[in-house]
Structure formats: C-alpha cells, structure tokens
Image (cartoon, rainbow, N blue to C red; front, side, top):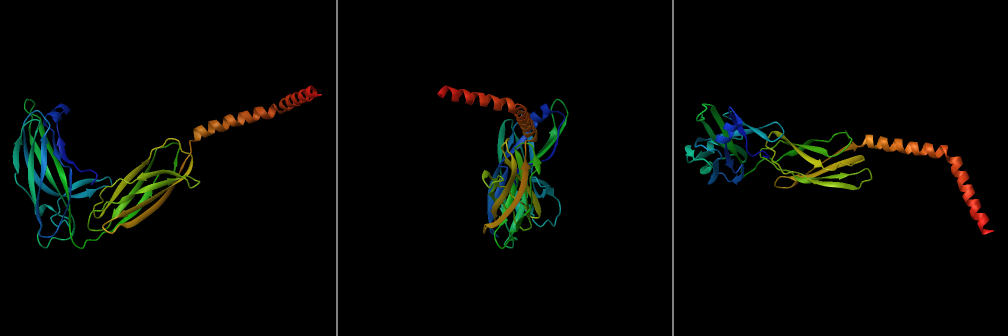
Amino acid sequence: MGVGVFIVSFLIAASTQAQSSAISISPLTFELTANPGDKFTNIVKVYNNGDTPVNVTMEVHDFAPTGEEGKVTLATDEDYSYSLTKWVTVNQETFQIEPQSFRPVEFTVTLPPNAEPGGHYGTVLASVSGVTEGTGAAISQKIGSLLLLQVAGTAKESLSIASMEAPEFSEYGPVIIASRFQNNGTVHLKPRGFILVQNMFGQETAKLNLDQKNVLPNSVRRIESTLDRKWLWGKYTATLTAIYGSTNEPLSYTVSFLVIPWRVSLAVGIASLIVLIILYRARRRIFLALKILLKGEHDGRM
C-alpha cells in the first residue's frame, strides 16, 4: 500500500501534549511471500518520540482497503477472506518505552499446511493509552505496520484499468492524470509502467513513470501522475502502458485533454489585431513612403 502507516484513533487535548506522547513504528510496510506450512519471524521497532515514558500494548488485526487513495480500515469480520491475524503472534504484548528511545518487537508468522494461496493482510499495532501527567488529559493512540503476505500457489491475478482521467480543459499546467486500477483477483498487484504524453502533432511532450503502488483484491486504487509543465497549448494525448503480475500481463489506456492559456492567447490576439488595423489604416502612407524611397534611389543612380 502507498500508505504504510495509519492511525486508528488519536485523541489528545492539545498539540503540545501530542508532542509529549507521540509514538511511531518502523518499518511501515512488510511485503512478504511464503509457502503453506512456513514459519518465519520479523521485527518492528516502536519509537517513543516524546519526553515521558509510555506504556505500549501490541495487537494484531486484519485490515481491508477503504476508498481509492490507499487507505485501510480494520477488518472485524471473522470470516474475512484475506485474514492474516490468526497466523501472527507477537512475543511481547505489553512494555514500557523510555523517552527518546525505541523497543524492538518480534512477531512470528506461522502458516498452516493448508493455507489458502493468494493475499492475506494484517497489521501489527502499537497502542498507547493513559493520562498525561500534570494535565489529566486522556490520550489514546494506535499506529501500525502493515503486513502484506502472498501465499504461494494458484492465485488469481486479474487487474484492469477502470478509467483514466484528466481535466478536459485547462488554462495552464501542471495537469494531473489519474489512472484507476481495479483488482478482481485474490492477491495484491502492483502495476508497473509509464504514461506517454504527446501533442497534437504526435510529438513526445513528456514520459511519466507510473508510481508503483499496491492494489488490494476487490478494490480500486487511484494512482496520480503529474505533467509538471505550466506552458502548454493545444490538444494532448496521454497513453498509459503498463504490466502487472507474475506473467507481466499488459495494460493500456488513452485519454485526451485540452490546454489553452486563453487569457494570454486573447491578449496576443487583440494586440495582433490592433497592429493589423494600424497597418491597414496606414497602408497608403506606407506605400507612399516606399514609393518616394524607391524613386530617390532611382534618381541617385541616373
């Protein structure tokens, strides 16, 4: 996921109190692969960035995607198809961290022999709750590291481009091009590719690399690319070329958009029209001046 860390709840009385009790976690995301029956261990580090000791409780939960921006929410359905929680344990559930220090926390993933192939998604959460000394303000914070596990075996890889969007008309750049990927498979997929932007004459204007972000099963992920130029003029075509999955399946999509700095164009047009009117009205004087000039040159040669 593009958003590797999320806050489930963060209730605090004032920003100064938030500074005194804030925790963070690293790494933000684990992308893991394993076979049914495997067992392995990893470590997260929980940091106390504040100036007072904090009591931390570790939890493990499933998560599911929400919206199209890469955010997630805790999954509470016991029959969640992509559950990982039941396979994960942490070695220490509660502990205290001193100010400006961290605690490594080991967690173990144990896959059953009949683990279903495909994607399984969970988060190792660190939570802090208590009362701030001196103020009595209640503080509650949960922050987690995401686990994206792919179990080897026959999984369905199916990714499509739901749509590709750009403003139909803009006066100036930059222009944001949004590609919406829909995952109808059973494992997370990360499209790889680029967007070729061409002008009305077919000439290359820019080549934009597609941000590599995971798209979870049964979700749509919006990935934005920016044509970071202010001065553009005319009709442009953006063509997305991408691949995904273990067999590099191809994807493509094309969208067109128009960029015309109409106020500048209008000012230039008006100025040009004024010049033409002046020249038109002064044409007789110009012709007469040229005639006199040419006659003078002719008399000088006689």
